[in-house]
Image (cartoon, rainbow, N blue to C red):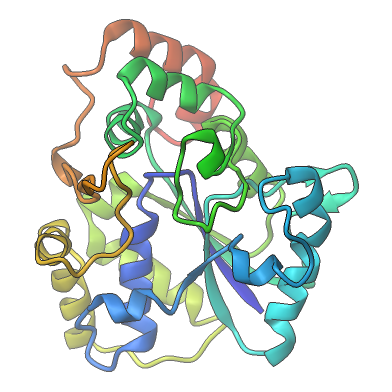
Length: 280
């Protein structure tokens, strides 16, 4: 009964959750952050604490991925879960399966634009951010990367692995490019509505769609964050200072700004995926 909202970190997951939560949980489409809280993160401590206390041990946690999801599904109701976890299998333990999953919305973003976003969000240099994208990552607070997940380990893989595993091993999937949301959010919203109508009932009107688009825009969400309404910021390492989550948005454009060597390396390592997605 799970509909995943899955993405590599900093690829538009929060924006997508804002859109979907306004669509499903509001009558008028006017967004506020109380709606987005209805879409929980997975993995998260509360889903595993009855099974194990070794939340930073991937080889322990993998045993309970499916069990935790089966428990979530006991109410037999459709629910949305956010994840940055790769849709992998370790030994014989799958992250999810057809019995647990109803559908997936996967958001992908040009990795060349992710360099700056990851650098800002995780307080890394652009070179470190590039290595983050290229290397297989298992992360938790213990690894110096905080996804606000109760210090529970999350396997994100490389950007390429994340994209491939979700899109090759998943049925009932809607692929949304972050750039398409920027260029024509109305068109992408219609795609989301058509897709979700296959699995869940909800009311929608032209007025509601207009409100969703206006109140989930980058500038609107940035304003809410500036007012202190957003609770998912991470802190600057070693301080209590919050790092702006809604940083540059549409102004984050890699062309002419990304170090040429980093650009070339990313394009070389991810060439087939970039071509497939129309980024090259």
